Amino acid sequence: MKSRALSEILDALTQTAFFSENQDDGKVRCYACAHRCTLKPGQRGICLMRFNQEGELRAPWGYVAAANIDPIEKKPFMHFLPGASAMTFGMLGCNFHCDFCQNWVSSQALRDPASNGAGRYVEEITPEELVAYAQHSGTRIIASSYNEPLITSEWAVDIFKLAREAGLYCVYVSNGFATPEILHALQPYLHGMKIDLKCMSDPHYRELGGSLQVVLDSISLAHSLGMWVEVVTLVIPDFNDSNEELWDAAKSIASISADIPWHVTAFYPTYKHTQSPPTSAEILQRAADIGQEAGLRYVYAGNLPGRVGSLEDTYCSQCNTLLIERHGYSVFKNVLAGTGQCPKCGTKIAGVWG
Ligand code: SF4
Image (cartoon, rainbow, N blue to C red; front, side):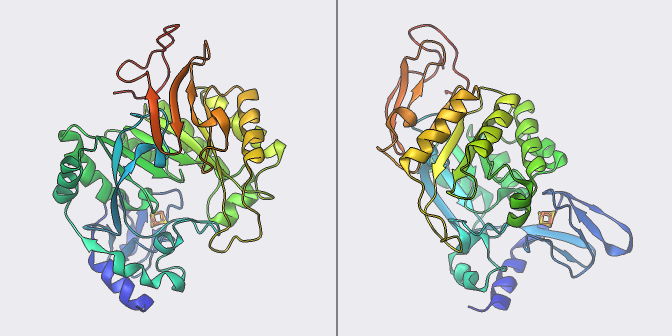
């Protein structure tokens, strides 16, 4: 399928954006993400999915490129209804262009010609149908993931309104390149955010299409708005795995709250980033040691199930009792369900427990 054909398919599946402001001369300013694109009629935003059509910003609406029932541990969230499943939907496109993206066929649609085939995943659907799918599947959570949810926030909000009425929890799996305005607008709908902290080098962040300080500010604001926040760093050898950079990341998170779980996850060579080797269990152990040394109470190692010892499990931050035992995305034991309290010492563990 040619790029032009894909853009025609996607442009037809849009509605008027409401996370934008009209300006003079038919220009519109989008604030769904921190790029804050100002677009003249006919122009597309950096994400390529939102565009100015005759003075009106159009935003993706009315389709999914994927909708699956996943364990919440896969997002990953470790302190958010452990063992629950999440109906997870995604659209196409991203405001970043990370060369190590695992979902690049979806995320780089309209940017990388190799993604042109992504159009075959597009399925028209309504918010009502998606929420019904979640309910019939017995999930307790709806997640916007796979591509960057910020750029398709109008669609997510329309789904989340219905989901909340149905008693479901709603979360974003995001790169955190958000504006304060969009986080405030999403706050009534979002129970949780998984935010990537990809590195602590601003030049590296700019190569990916973002900015370090914006992401740190988003973590802080989402936390202070009362969303449950977990932070993920994909640890890539020779990119972000120096002791200094890992220490900076852990201290930055701990300065917001020592209760924010930090996931250090293993990289595999993929897409255009094939120069780094896969992350070893030893590197993840070193990163986790640094996180704990920096004061974080809950540090997890991901993507290497069974190879990282106790770093898949949750322990009481006070008395070190094993509270949740996991292997990969499976939960074998959970003594926190409902109360979130350590049964031995009574300490309340931060999180959403049911
Ligand atoms: S979502 Fe971000 S990249 Fe896309 S148009 Fe809006 S400000 Fe620009």
